[in-house]
Length: 235
Image (cartoon, rainbow, N blue to C red; front, side, top):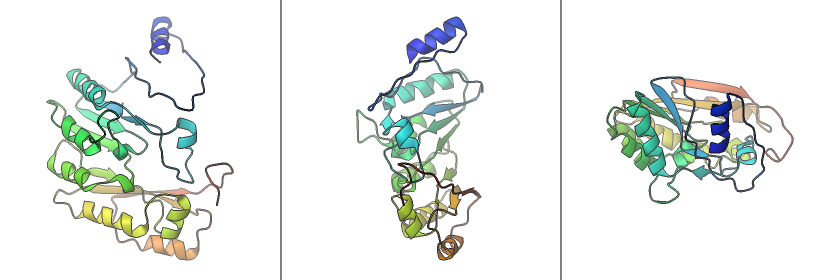
């Protein structure tokens, strides 16, 4: 990766290399092009180990690989030193993060540590998975004002039957308990979500269950399901 970046910077032309790797290593790049002088995105993980039926990420990007927390912290410190005041942490299921060298160091710990960096005013993250949303994560969001009070928590369907078909790893009641904790937090936290409409096998009854969800969202994104053939959708 670094050789490709070095060649592109030196020649001013694109550098391309194609490879197939069943167990790809998470690349660490010495240079990342960022055009915004005050807001920067920082990748903390690549790939995904979940197998949601509608998603191709595990097949295209491989299993989840997490970066060393020390490298993440140093990158953020360097960005803040350059004038960035807002950081967006990125991962396919960002809150499933665990330091590969210290497995007990999880996403809430990373947020807590980054909040200590002087000059960093705002921390955002995208996108969390409902099954990995812990009480510890909610607590650090309540206690650390640097962490923006917004959570995008994809519901996808209000029907437990459809959620099972989607292989989401949670049911309606489990999701509502998590969302309820967020809405009841002592610090007001905005909540947004994604919902897939017309998923294969969805009935009018399933649709009606979703419409009766008791959570009031600040924003909802609806997507129409597309029937695809292949390994990611076998119903």
